[in-house]
Length: 59
Image (cartoon, rainbow, N blue to C red; front, side, top):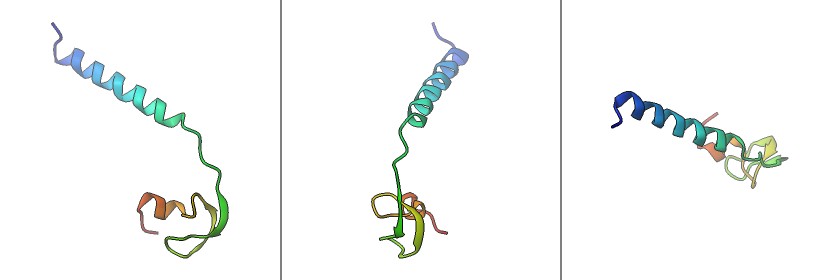
């Protein structure tokens, strides 16, 4: 029978595995140009959007 500490350890291990899988995803290659979302000239666009517009953040 699992106690609270065992459950917490299992949850932490699952979280670590998911985080490592996400970190191993390849980083898409970007290109310089004008962002389709905000219109700013940026050194790296992925699918036509700057990092701020892709993430939904404000500058």
